Length: 281
Image (cartoon, rainbow, N blue to C red; front, side):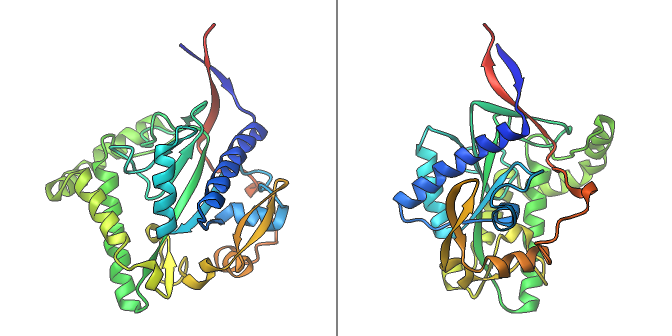
């Protein structure tokens, strides 16, 4: 029987950092390129480490290197890889590498999280996107439909809320829409469709790229050339890979990224409590 021992914020950060150190070593050994991403890159530039109130780590890779890394991690037992190839009802469009000595207890109901989810590192793929604006709008809408199909047809339909009764109400309200998606195909159908559509435009021959789940027609799309030039950047006393265009990326995503948010916004938005797995003595 497992006993629960809660991790402090610093312990979560240290566990996530060890995941990054491990992935960095694998990438160096296999000549794979990645960059710190989102708030992790912001933290590296602004704080030389984690954003003080944040605790997760994101990296990003062009699709070919992403696929190579996941194939290595899937065979490695040091950490647990969560993605659509290792989980029958995976709800994310990117991979998570998990420390199996920990687990995360969601503070939300019906969140669709994997029961083995622990402290994790997120690994995002970048795929090509069309340059034509009209084509881009149609492409975004198709991907949104694919992702909705995934979320409505996973085993435990996604209907998260901090309130159990509100979550149950969501499930009832969403039932007709779920049946509509299921008429077209089950989870396997929608997952395969999303993966095929996401990789429709090869990133190696595309002028622009994105993590396509999140594309908008006016932002969250980046010049692919940004992700071919790298440098080392300090993070928590170590050096990791970063795109050279870190200022351009952070400005496009965050705006004036060196300005701290208001005090009331300086808090983590992750709905988890982290625990160590300990056997009862």
